[in-house]
Every structure is written in structure tokens, then in C-alpha cells.
Length: 487
Image (cartoon, rainbow, N blue to C red; front, side):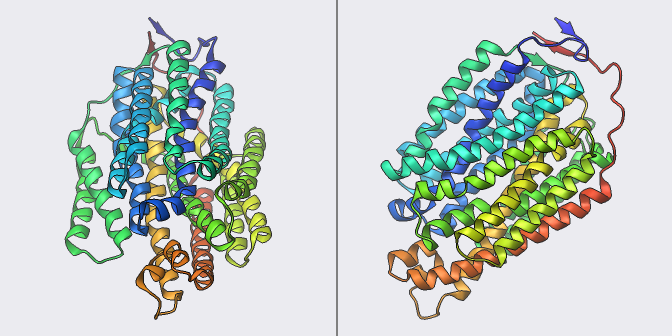
């Protein structure tokens, strides 16, 4: 059956949104919980700082590298189908992660979870775009979708802290299995299948993007001038851009970047993700190793950020009727920069709380408007690819953030530690605590966190300037877009 997506309302659309949000929630809880598990992975599995970064980055690299392919396939073969398959894959890989005993095994399991996540994430936004045909309702739905990301930040640390204090580190992955199972049932019961004309798969583009991104992040994580790997990264990424420009049906339709709202929102999200991506990695270690908080206490300590962001996510959605996306994105990013600046000049939890709340306000104002600006520039019949491009931009920023800021933290920490201490103590704050050098390690990590916060503030200011300069009011919505096939 073919329907006009601009005139036909799906009667179960709000229930479908709830199911989409549940699928999104399982991905977000997993990544939030993992940050809290870092000290446990240090102590129980013997994971090094490089291992920890790869446990996080393996997921992000698989996720970002396959998003465009998954989005294109879901457009062609069915968005609900890919959502369900991805949830099955993600839940299965999570169960596998529970059984591993070595860091390299966990890195492999995280890579497989990233593959599953790449199938799930594009489908959530693309189904939302096709189910909510009216612009006003779609903006509200996207605000709810954004708020759920913040709910994941709230519930993840709390649930994760409880599990880590009462069970072993593998329980944080076991949590994914029942949530994924519920989301699968909800998708099968509530969602109609939807598909639209899709571009052919571009295997060369997929290969070049994965090779280029993996090589670049590897160099950054290892903090070494590995000339052969750098050459591979530069050649692969340059070849990817050139290849995509010559394709009639590219994996990444580069012509969309000619749209100022798309390109401005994309690069604003990239810089925003880069600035904020390593905050959880930084703060969970500061709260636990420097301030001495337990896992659950550390999770609760970060709740004010998510609560403030969730509240101002709703405020931003309301202000979107009166103010432009450019104003909201720019103002929100400047708030985030201010929060980073507070964190860069203070110590202790109460001053840190002020910075977290300011950052939450900024994220709540900027995020939904940036996503709405980006997705509003994409035709509905390419919803899967468009959603994947949105997620790819965000995940690339997160991957580079974890790698770059993680390296900045590690480098500053090592340089601040006394030279005569054992290598294990100078390499990581977890190793220093194990060897009894906690006081010196706390001072060194605090200095590293201050530097990382200034870096985050700088990227948020750059993102704000870019958004104010580039973003423009959205063009009028076409009266009769190409219909989507539903069945």
C-alpha cells in the first residue's frame, strides 16, 4: 500500500515513538554504564588505559563506520526489520561480553555491539520521520527522542552504580539483554514496516571510511607518530571523499553539505560532540579516584547534568516556536562552554555541580535545535540515510573526542606525576591507587581534568560561532513530497 506521508496520520504514532525511544535507550544506557565500570575493569581485568580507550572506541568505530550502509539498507529492505535485527545482534553481543575474561575479548564483543547499534540507530530517527508527517508533531517527537537520550544518562549511572556495587563488572552488559528483548516485542507489535527508494550499497566507500577512521583514531590513541598508519589514514579518507564525489548513488551524498543548515548543523554537532564526548570518561574517574566516591555515588553525582538537560530540552522545544535554531544552538553551546570553564578552574564536587548544571542547560537548548535543523534539510524518502548521516557526524565527534581528549588527559597526568614513581603509577590513576600513590595521582589527574575542560570549552565556543555564522531559517516545506511505501 502507498500513502502520502504528508496527509495520512499513523494512529499509533505516539506508541510507536515510545517503542523507538526504548530501542534508543538500550544503546545509551550501555555506553553510560561502561564509563562507570572503568575502575572495575582496571582492577578486575587488568585493563590498561589504552585497553579502556579501545573498549570504548571499538564500539564507536564499528557503529560510525557502518551507519551509512545500515541506513541505506533499511530504506530499501525495511526500517522496522533492521531495527529488530540490530536489537537481536546488540543483545546477543551484550550476552557475549558478560562471558569474556580478557581485555581483547571485551574489545571484540564491543565491536560486535557496535555493529548491532549501527543497525538500530538509523532506524529510530527514520521511522520517526515517516510516522510523524506533520512538521509541528515531528518537532515535538524529536524533542522527546532527544530527551530520552538524557533519560539514558540519568538511568545509566544509577543502574550501573547499583550493579557495580553489588555484582561484578559483567552485570552492566547483562542489563542490555532484557531491555533489548522488550524493545523487540514492542517493535513487532506496534510498528508498521516502511521503506522507500534507496541508494545502492557502496562497498568501496564503506571500506575506505572504516580504514581511514580506524587508522586515524589508532594513531591518536597510541600518541605516536606512526608514519605508515598516518599515511593509510590520510590516503583512505582522501580517497573516500574523491570516490563519493564521483558516484551517482554515493553512500554519503556530499551534495547535502551545500545546504547551509545541513552543513552548519553537522559541523556544530561534530564540534559539540568533540567537546563533550569525553566528559563522562573524565568525570567518572575524577569522582571515584580523586573524590573517593563509590560507583553508585558517582552515578548519582552526575544526575544534575542530565536532569538540567532534560528540563531545558523541553524549554528549548517550546522556545523553538519563537526563536530560530541558530539562536538556540549558539546560545546552548556558549552555555556548555561556560560549564566547561567552571570545571576548569574549580575542585571538589559542589563547584563541579555548578559546571554540570550549566552544561546541562546548554545541552538541552542546543541539541534538539541542531538535530531539527539537520534532519529538516533531508528529504523524507532518504530518511534512513539522513538519520545515519546525523548519527555518523555525532559518533565521529565522539570517537575523536575520546581519542584526543583521552590522550590529552593521559599525557598531562603522566607529565604531572613525579618522575621517580613506578611506570604503572605514572601511566594511569587506577595503577597509582593500586600501588599506594593516590594523593599524588589525585593532584595530577585534577590538573589533567582542568586542561581537558579548557579544550572542551574551546570546541564549544568554536561550534557556537560556526552555528551563528552558517545556520539560516529553514526553507518552506514542499507541499507534496515523494510518498513512502508502507506495508
